[in-house]
Length: 483
Image (cartoon, rainbow, N blue to C red):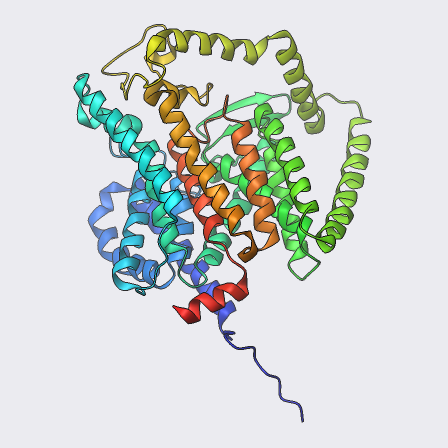
């Protein structure tokens, strides 16, 4: 009689634990969203939800962090968190909760918590020091403390989230729980985004757009969750390109398809360019990861190219300019036209760059500080503010100068160096996905505000910390036993 042996360290209830973590994280998301959206029931909700939320944060910190990630991006269906108390926003509350979870793990968790790498801590520390110097200069310029703090708080949250998430993700299965919550949230959002963009349903209650515009037959929904959709699409593609077929492969393929479709329907031409660069980077890195991965990559890429090519030929052959595929291809071709002729949005952004740099003048090394528009109004700039969603990196240069921009970019670059140095302990899909995502991020710096907005910086910081702490299952088991 042969007795089945369970591998050492395996947990028979792992699936139940993950399911429980997801359900608890869902409850935490809804409870937190309701707390923010309905401040009239503040005391009652705190009394009821605080004990449960505290238990979730301590027993399943990864799931809690994933839920707060969605809260920060206003990604909880049916609960719109756009409003806040004055200048305080849901993103601020989510960051504060993440710090509390990390502090709780430091106080109540195991003593053997790995410290943040010296290079990463140094990069975060230098940028934080420059931020505080800029804040001090703002106060010296006569800007009230509250206005200066809220005008530049997103940059500070970036370097606060990274060490907090670093601590939380060291808990056993924390990064897996976080990934499950975030992936499910992004998948649900993408489904409703696609349906709403194509006019099939009114998805406003599920996507919570800040702005809606039309381009042909497609509705463009501007939401903070769009950045997370791009991130999930990149990593899902990396998993498909580097892993052998398993029971999860159809689910991952479906996730990649729906998030990629949602990304395409965003109609963001700068993001298209970034995704193309990221795809090439991913292929180049995957090729160097061994013959087995090259074989999987070649087969999956071939299938993707053939299926996509046939679909485009069939759809574009219909000839209707209102088809979504023709709207997308029209956006891409118009982007090349605008770039070559410096017309359209390219011309607008170039003029805006010129005007903002004229206001900046000789202060480009250190910036103009955190000048809130209600305290310092600039009539030559849109809405009188030195920050603008159409100029990307100028949001850092105008406030903290070129020095601040360089120190800001040093944080992801130093983390990328750390990930590369420790690549042997990480699964191949994470390495491929990380550098592809980083290429997408850096390619959009001139015009996109993923790295220069409150929600974008929080999402970027969490992604960086997640990639820096992600390890293979075998190594995580060894770390758990040694801890």
